[in-house]
Structure formats: structure tokens, C-alpha cells
Amino acid sequence: MATTPDGTVSYDNKAIGTPSVGVLLKQLVPLMRLESIEITESLLLSEGDYRCYSHFFDEEILISALEKSGIEPMLSVAQELVEELHPLMKEALERRPENKKRRERRDLLRLQLLRIFELLADAAVISDSTNGALERDTLALGALFLEYVDLTRMLLEAENDKEVEILKDIRAHFSAMVANLIQCVPVHHRRFLFPQQSLRHHLFILFSQWAGPFSIMFTPLDRYSDRNHQITRYQYCALKAMSAVLCCGPVFDNVGLSPDGYLYKWLDNILACQDLRAQTL
Image 1: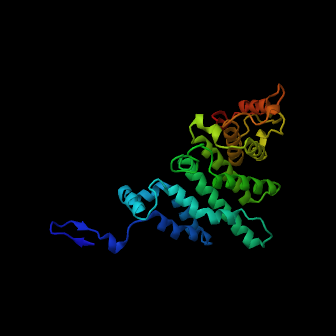
Image 2: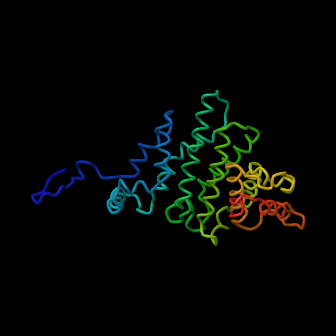
Image 3: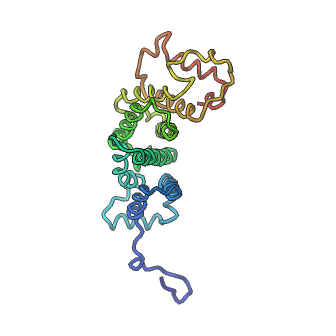
């Protein structure tokens, strides 16, 4: 840093180094392994809100730095973040015998990753075909992220009989992430998101098991004595995800559309619910 004759301050990039999002992420992501809740919570919020990087890096400086480093400017912060998180994503989805402490740490990592991706999806970063996790030519979810969604689904299916508090939060944030991801894509592009309709079907069934009175296995809402029954946060997240998955492509199960099919009964339950959140889906 130096002061010019007219009193302004100039900076020598050679002295302080050229700003780089990649370098910043390489420093931040490993810190997610720490057991300090305060640190990991701060990291989660900063990594999940990609817009925070604009406070550190001027756009023109960032593009110039990317060009000098040989990285295409179109390689976005979101793409770099997902790439840096990939080892943690693989670690979080491993399924092997482990003691209670290791299990708790892995569950916490699973929860943190889902919250980051939920925030990115809500900001429409992941859903951007230019800079996000979608394939540019097909507008489908990229292979890496598609695998992450599918493996997380299988993991949660295997642990669906457990009612541990952190698992409830993991289910809620997985539901919210999938719903945000779909809803931030233009309606006419949503049918391309999931190349395999079977994944949508599996997701719908899984979310249904967390949706309380809106499970497709339940009888009409009339069986509840209280018509003003307020659904829980967990049930609402699951219901929102069910709606998003159902509406992002062709119907994945024609049986549900038969005259007495479960989809019509499910819709009747939503329309009969007095909870405003259900009515505004």
C-alpha cells in the first residue's frame, strides 16, 4: 500500500496477492470439520450465501484474476464451492459402522452440507444453467449433484425408522433443498431436471413418509377431530417438497391418476387443511 502525491491510497497487487475465490474456499471448507458450533455455523452461512463473496472481491478484479490463473470466468463461485465440498459430500454419505461420537460428527456434517445447498438453491445459484449445477445442453441436474441427491435419498430411506432429533432436521433441510432447487428453475425447464422419472417417484414417496397427515398412505383429513390442525415445520417442508417433485415433469405413476387414485385423495387433504401454508402451495 502506498500514498500518491495527491493523497490517495494505492495498492500493490504483487504485495498483497491477487484476490481469488478459489483460494478463499480452500481455506474455509476444511474448517467445516471443526467441532466448534460457532465456527461451523459462521462458515455455513458464509458459504451458503454466495453473494457474500462480492464484499471481498470486486467483479472486474475477480474476472481478471480468473483469466490470469487460466480458469474460465464462467466457472462460478457456486461451481468452485461444490467442487471444494465434493470430498466432504462423499464423506457425509459413507455408510459404515462407527461409534456414537463419529456418528454424531457425520450427521452434523450431513446437516451442514444440506443447509449450504438449501441456501444456494434458494438464491437460484445451483439452478443457473450457466453458473450453477445444471448441464448447459440438457438443463438436467449435473451428474455430481444428481448423485448427491440420490445417495442422500437412499441414506435417509435406510434410516427412516429412526426419530433422532438431528435426523428430523436433516430430513427437513433435504426437503427444503429439493423444493428450492426445483422452484428456482423456470417452470418450462423443470421437466428436464431429473432425467430418470424413477428418482422423482422415489423422492415423492420418501417425502410422503415425513408429511404427517399429508402422507399418501393416510386416510382423508376428516379422520382428524381438529380441522384446524396446524402442521409442523417438518411436515410442511416435506409437503412442499412433494408438491415440487410432483409438478416438475410428467406424472411418474399413472395409478395415482386413476379415478380413486392416491393423488386425488392427497390433493383433497391439502384443500381440506385450514393451515394457510398448505393452501398457498
